[in-house]
Length: 335
Image 1 (cartoon, helix red, strand yellow):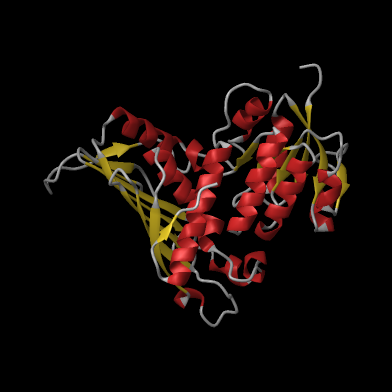
Image 2 (tube, rainbow, N blue to C red):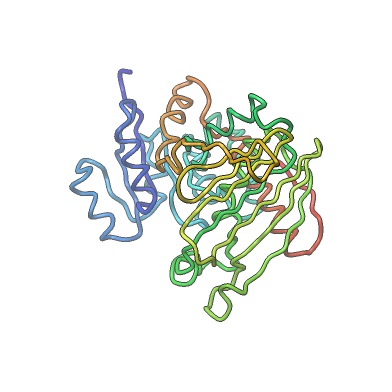
């Protein structure tokens, strides 16, 4: 390339990993940074001394020199910033979730279709070595016909709901804020979209703390093929952060574990031990989706998470939240 892609990063919490990832890519140059915290922004003066630093996200989005905008701000800022960036002709790499409501998702889909730009989101578990092994095993038929997938986002960080910015978002959604990783994993493994969902929720784990949302949501997803998935977002658990995942097929069952190897069960006999799955877990960094996204921006291949896949994961999460709130089975509204 004769000229590198100029990148701006909004939000230097998790966005710091994205800034480093794009800076390390030979086709990219991070030239603008934004954060509301002056101290955090100041720390980057020595890391990327030539990058412009701003307190207002709009100054990054509206910079005509930028080709790519990374949005890693707080969840309730995403919709507005994603739409503005797409309308400004920028490619967008966004932290999950893309937005917090169905109308917002429609706005983003319209802006993306009109823009001709690439958009992806950082549901990064797809790059985990263990889960990539699982995807290949499912595709190869090693598990037989898959009929049930169970996933739970075990957060183990209740303080971030009570004391952090999440707790300041009215009715913060733990499914959009964390469970979406397991929703994306289920859709990726199944290579199929659910048609309807039912769900329940609870606030017992965070009651009387000041948090206004629900810290636990559990959903059942139905697919036209007959596949069923159970997905949970559990933010109040006394447990280290962990992605529980089990895939049940007619020939084998995969079971993720928080410590050590995963297990592949191929027998119903109690005396038969499972085979270990030694691929690393989590074995992934927050910037691991960046290379494929940059390639897609340059017209070479697809991002790890396509626009359609990013929209679908949000649509399923929104349906889960509606089902839990209204205590009814809900159809998923895809865009």
